[in-house]
Image (cartoon, rainbow, N blue to C red):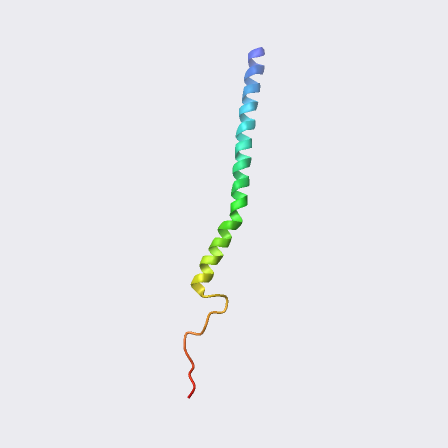
Length: 62
């Protein structure tokens, strides 16, 4: 009976360590999600030339 309790305790400790690692990893991913979105927006805005890009044709005075 003592062996079962010891094994159960070891399993619970290992499970707690695994869960703690997953929580840290999830937190890291959540913290960096906004940075990735910001970088993607900045890259898109550079290609588009801003939210109101200039005209492709020039209008000159006649």
